[in-house]
Amino acid sequence: MTPATLRRTATTGPTLILDVAAVTANVRAISAIRRQAGARGAGEVMAVVKADGYGHGLADVARAALAGGATRFGVTSVAEAYTLRDLGFTEPVLSWLNPVNADFTQATRAGVELAVPSHAHLRAVARQTPGAGVHLQLDTGMARDGTPPEQWESLCHTARCAERAGFVRVVGVMGHLACAAEPGHPANRRGRECFDWGVRVALGAGLRPRDRHLAATAATLSDPRTHHSLSRIGAGLVGIDESGRVRLRPALRLTAPLVTVRTVPAGTAVGYGHTWTSPRATRLGLVPVGYADGLPRCVAACAQVQVAGVRRRVVGRLSMDMTVIDLGPDPAACSARAGDVVTLFGPGDGGEPTAADWARWAGTLEHEIVTGLGPRLRRVVTTHTGPGPDERATR
Image 1 (tube, rainbow, N blue to C red):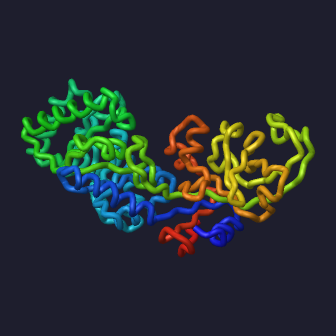
Image 2 (image 1 turned 60 degrees about the vertical axis):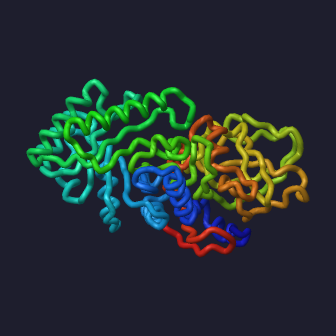
Image 3 (image 1 turned 90 degrees about the vertical axis):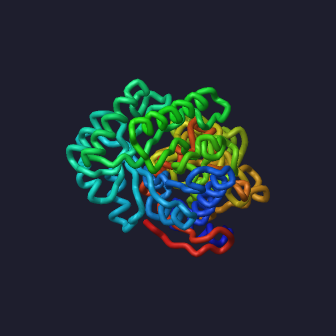
């Protein structure tokens, strides 16, 4: 993205710039990895667009994922599935986190398949909406969602009886790995073995699930043994790979205009609580973005931004709406002036901080950084990567 383009997008206020071409490229790369590994289902990718497409914008991420070859969508709640349908997406959708009293009838009418993590969910779905497509969900070692292994055989036999009676269609078996971001962790082997056992039990009960899926992004990129018939890719859509095995393309850039620049003497205290005092005369820049926009307040002591091509340190505490940066005493070293663009994070190609940097500074995950970005931020979509992108504002 050219400096001129960045200046245009930043002058209106804090702006999130989504590169949809990055999403498309990430899906293609992940699909190719599945194909090269000889996965069943070739390169089939379920694009997980929960949490507003990981904070990047559900509609734009969904469209870009389809352009990259994704064949279906995954979401948490049926409400998110309805949003996809309202936006005009007709592809298969799986919803896997719903209370037993959810409106499964409406979901099935909307063509939404449902995860069944318990006997109670199976009964609720069968009672409300005969013929619903369900994915039996096995807990493979997280003690979180899914049926515990000791109840799995019973669930499979009950599901088979319900299927014969026409109450449900068992179209999938699913699980999730606890430690996929650490490829060598022994919990992954136990999870794989548990899932393989679970599939054998389901087949032994007479079920013939079309879909068998265990891997999310990290497992897909690090362990072909987890691939099965499809992979659920969420974080990988937007360029996050916790396993560190593949360089995906981060899809988001956060910019803001520099509101003011002031010169202050040595000994000037900055911000609430005076947690930082200038050790020398310097110039301070004010950036109109803060923790109400999703920046983690705890990073002030180590965070950096990029302005005028140079990384500069955040100083003082982040405020709700404002961040102060130290531009240094020498204008020749950093020529920033009011109105210039500040890049808080981006793909990192130009030396700017990344969302991964902010996550490290905050002691958290990139997922938390990007999904926590606030609604006040203006959203802009770029339709291709490279200089001079065609842009449109989405809100």
